Image (tube, rainbow, N blue to C red; front, side, top):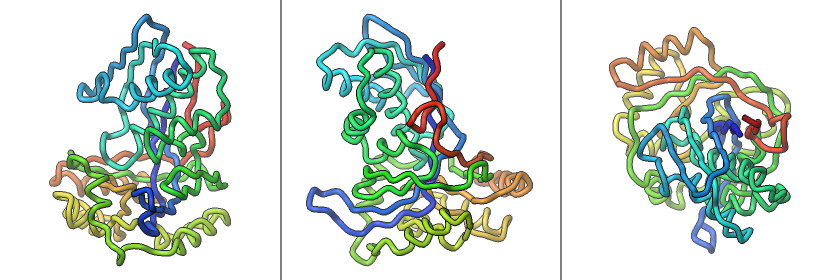
Length: 293
């Protein structure tokens, strides 16, 4: 079977503080976009995960961990041949690995005739990463807790956006970015509530797009400040960080603005995609699309 796993943007991301379990309490509005990876999953006598991005072959891939975690929870062998075609840039804050994991869990549940309730798959996914539960819903959603409590929300679909990303990121980026946070960076979720209200009313407000990591990323991630400055000069507005970065975005955008961004990025070796926002999938309850080969 074929599975399409979409990327996400964080329209708003606040950290409320550190939890007793060591994680951080977050409030974030996530929005799916039509940038996606493809997984091809077929029966096999072994478990094999092959990716066109060689560094993600085998056991280091979150898809492998999804397969072994699901099989262990059901008392069966993890038998499947999985090929992954990457389009979502790796390690950029777009949720590609988490989306792949959710897609694999849905497809393997079907391949292995497990018929697990969605709530059970979400619980298994939450063990793999805080973002994974969101990708069972897709579209627009409010995430709270450590990012694993998901409330789908209505929002406009088909809104164009320009996603900007540098050539590389840094090792252990997410953990390092959270490590830079202190009490002065914590907030009460008020910006997220206002952003959420605007989305539900069908409004857009660029000044309500917020990310607690924005200034930290510009300071700590090599070359990102220069990229942000170049885009700001070309378009007259500052791009917004998604996740822990380093990818940034302009929303809404236009094909003309996207072309201007591409020209501005040439001296920096950075890239940009022109994408559109997505609603929830109509093919199943999740934010991924499963089809038979």
